[in-house]
Amino acid sequence: MLYDLLVIGSGIAGLRAAIEGSQRGLRVALLSKGVFMRSNSSLACGGINAALGNAEPDSPLIHFEDTLRGGDGLALKGAVQILCQEAPAEIGFLASIGVAFDQQDERIAQRAFGGMGKKRTCYIGDKTGGAITQTLFRVIMQKYPIHWIKERMLLSLLVHEGVISGITALNRQTSEIELLGAKAVVLASGGYGGIYHEHHTNTPEITGDGQAAALRAGLRLSNMEFVQFHPTTLPRTHALISEAARGEGGILINETGERFIDELLTRDKLARKIAKELSEGRRVFLDVRHLGEALLERKLPSLLKIAMSEGINPIKEPIPIIPSVHYSMGGIECDLGGATAIKGLYVAGEVACNLVHGANRLGGNSLLESAVFGRIAGENAAKFAQSHDYHDFRLEPIAKDTNLIEHILRGENRYNFQSIRKTLGKTLYEKAGIFRTQEGLHGALDYVSYLKRIWIGCHCIHKQKEYNSELQAILELRNMLEVSEAMLLSALAREESRGAHFREDFPEKNEKLFGTPSFVRKLESGRLYMEFEPKEGTKGWLNRLKKRLTR
Image 1 (cartoon, rainbow, N blue to C red):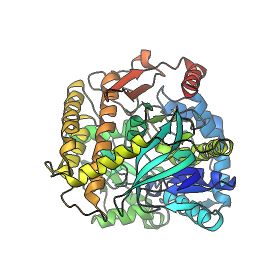
Image 2 (cartoon, rainbow, N blue to C red):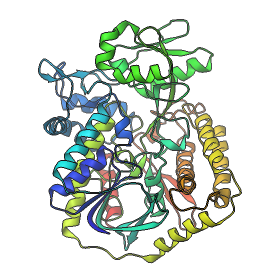
Image 3 (cartoon, rainbow, N blue to C red):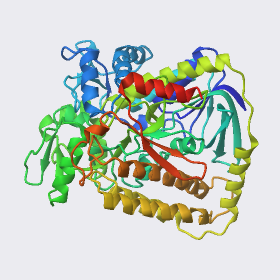
Image 4 (tube, rainbow, N blue to C red):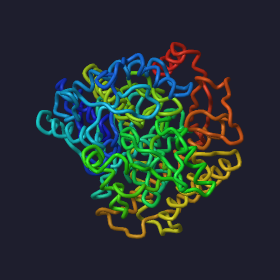
């Protein structure tokens, strides 16, 4: 099938991009790996930031300063400026299409979030992301003739002479390779938290597919070492307890009842402090009992549901919590318009790295980033599609993907690939988690290198093509290993502690790396190569990126 604009990912970034393309009269397709409405955007609970000033005096400038400070020396000023300036208008758009934000005094209510100097987080109880996603989905179904394609897994980006021409995707229902051509593509496939298998808050579909496909297509990944741990998740299931609970006044206590930290610090600081308590043998709890049953039912209903599903009654008892992997600040290198070094390919949301979050994302900025930069990427991709025709396909990548699928289906399996996914997640959680050392990172990298060598021996035990979940799991494992290696190489090279990246052997910041992103690319040999590239200020960094984009 041929489309003017192909959008990969059905979270908020993808939905906003698809709307922008369809508004311009383009033939738009929106591709989802799983069923629609199953994305990290749908799971995001707490809220979305904008300096509306409804709860107290505020401004985009203060929002800018808070976000820049939260980025700990790696946030790009130009990106942060766009995010904060566009935020009020984006909230206005969402409200205009029916997003039912909670109200106070006939204005959108706003609550406090960690790292914010003001109450600027707009919300719908503690189910904000799901409510926004549902509204965008409903509006698209009612107003826009977008072609929905579900249960397709991205395999390869098809590039010819530096221009995107489409993608190959695995039809999860039939195990067949499908070719989708497009004048422009927006990749909004999400982050890579799933590499920490069973130790993260993400949906099961989030396995770094977009980042791995980008590496194979010759693009660079940036700041992959910065993986955010959410401070408050349930110990057994790693289910997320929203920051909204702390924004409404919930407190953190240890098993002695001591309130040991300011609950509205940035997530990196909170996660480290909680992890320290746990390592010293003290359990940690989120206590919301003092907020009262009425407030919990009105503003934190998801918290009640999640906790009670684990047999915990937050009205009467504190909730045991641990930190879990939640968000990835790193992603595919792009400019402030979402453009990549492949012409016609744009990225938005958690798959992208425009340096808006720097070394540490503030709560409430992820949904905002997806909405703002999803719209911008959609606008720019639509303009590209309007001014360009379809580009030629190269047959080699298509044949390569077809042969790979046949190889995985035909061979005799030699390894327990499900066990490999599990031990990979455990290894990364323990050796590349909240606290990192050279020894631990090297150990994890050696293990990943070993798994990459034996991956070729993973084959489907069951050979049927209809809904073969084993085939998808093996393909996902390939992506997880490539992305894990990129993350570990970057973490080893960054010999300092900054934001979400904490090296116990280098506990201080290295000022020589202030404002210096890391980059990983794949060489022709297949080996990954990691490098730092100083920004020389916002203008210098953007100028160098622009030169690469025009090569």
